[in-house]
Image 1: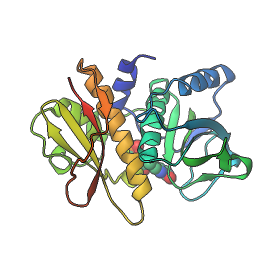
Image 2 (image 1 turned 135 degrees about the horizontal axis):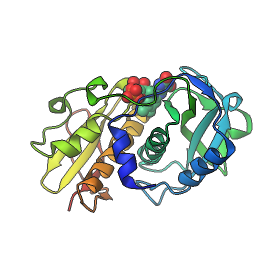
Image 3 (image 1 turned 90 degrees about the vertical axis):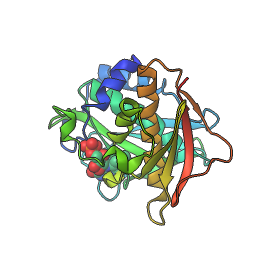
Length: 243
Ligand SMILES: Cc1cc2nc3c(=O)[nH]c(=O)nc-3n(C[C@H](O)[C@H](O)[C@H](O)COP(=O)(O)O)c2cc1C
């Protein structure tokens, strides 16, 4: 899978909440193979992915879908953003293949799937043969905040637009972007109730920034800069270097 195909899916993907059925075996093999190739945001954090079925997952706001791709991780600094960064590559891959998908913030695995190889569950992505549109016809159909509400960077609009369109839990868009020149820094909105989800959201936005920066021909190195300040109410997550 080329990064270009993932990048293009940013501008047309949408959450699919109605499913017509399971994907066939060959397609599942492709999905599992792509899942093994995901780039981490923080390579030092151990993760594992598992495909679960509808019975294997339970909880609020669950969509009825044939498959759920669950990500498990060791608990380490940045692990929720890392999970968001990785699974968003999956969301874009599925969309580019015409497979429906929807992030699932509420539901959790049941039984044996609660833990895998000693790693705790972080979040999952429902997927399957879509029973509704997988793509939007234009970016005007995205309900998102304007760029000036989520960044104080002047310019770099092409790259920031990719982050602006990113999906987020309850469509909160709980992120803020600072920097300019050769760097974009990503911050997440701290929250009593949705802190973990907001960190996942920041990882999703970082995934879109990374793909957009690669598309612009940059090396798009992902780094965690030491001692970074964040705007009030936000915490620093990571940066994309644009050189
Ligand atoms: C971390 C996260 C958790 C989410 N949890 C749920 C969920 O539990 N149920 C659901 O129906 N949608 C869920 N969504 C989907 C969002 O509601 C959706 O991405 C957002 O409203 C933007 O719409 P779009 O994905 O169609 O662009 C979640 C999205 C993210 C990123």
